[in-house]
Image 1 (cartoon, helix red, strand yellow):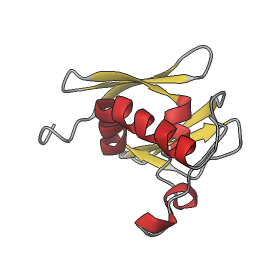
Image 2 (tube, helix red, strand yellow):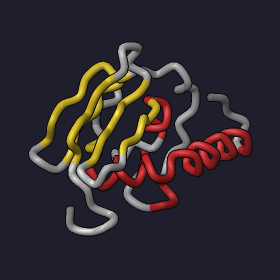
Image 3 (cartoon, helix red, strand yellow):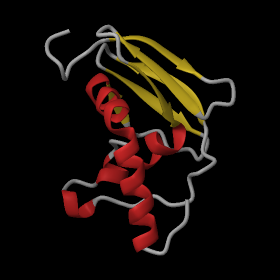
Image 4 (cartoon, one colour):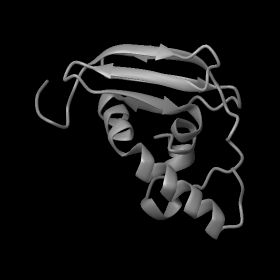
Amino acid sequence: MVDGNTAWPEELRLSSDKKTLHVAFDNGESYDLGAELLRVRSPSAEVQGHAPDQRQTVPRKKDVRIVNLEPVGTYAVRIVFDDTHQTGLYTWAFLLDAGRNQARYFDDYVAELKAKGLSR
């Protein structure tokens, strides 16, 4: 561990229903991250765009599932979802941030959907 914002994952475990990714870090933090949140916040250019104003709101992912986890070097994992999305590289820092902020990120997502007249 380098600092409070960097940690190395000791465990990545997919739940039996494939809707939750458990991530445990070497700093003692661990999180259960929902597939829906991981999908709608995908770090891919398809979702994030190439600039903040290009970010996409991804609706109707309430029931999305994770079908595969693929290691990418020593710094990330590619998550393959059952809706065929698989272009996001989820770095350890991304997963740590998602865990620490998941309630806020999910609330922001739900508010954004509501503002745009979209559904989960």
